[in-house]
Length: 73
View (cartoon, rainbow, N blue to C red):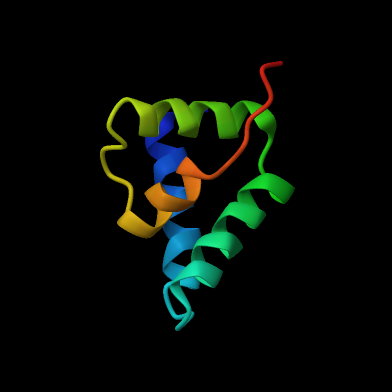
């Protein structure tokens, strides 16, 4: 999938969780959503994007993606 689209989707999720007053819970909510509902390929692409600098991601989305565990397959 196009990385710009993945970034936009991750930012949309982070914007939803930004209303959560507990920062750690917001990050966990985003991480949980990405883990449960995103295809592993999408997660790997986004994780690689963060490793390369993460341009365009909100700070909250970037923090959550850094905590996503991706399988090597």
